[in-house]
Image (cartoon, rainbow over all chains, first blue to last red; front, top):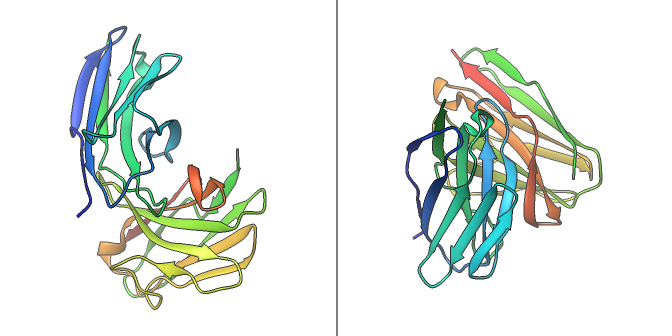
Length: 109
Length: 115
């Protein structure tokens, strides 16, 4: 079967660093997406990993280990506007995205 | 990036009625995807809308309940038929950067509440 596992909710402090983990099992695998979704809004693309390793993009970085079925999203220098849900979405062999329920990140001053 | 407009943004509907959601894209795309997102849950793909052919529905979704039109390469509609309170959800249309794969762009979503 297909399964995505990520924490339901996390809390972090403004200016700090937070790591959101995602483990997955899919029917084949092409890559993994991370999306950000603010409350009441549509998801927006953050990152896409195909190869193992860390991809850095400004304050956000995403890591992938294909052999372990594991990814994480690393957010540095947290800002209040980073309060949102973060959706892990691996892409199966048919290029279909399998969506996790998302991790709600709460940033406190 | 693609700009996607959805209408209505929100609506309150009576049980047993039907509502059609429209999705307009600012460029021609091969496939358009319709998703549902119930409160606090993940995105669930309802169907893929192909221009010039029948939509492809995912397990648990049927054409009679969610008829889809795709008259051209920039427009699609999703109808939620014979609504019940369980259909209360956000419905999102999306397109992929590269045909049927890659980064997805989403419309603003249509929030339906069924009484």
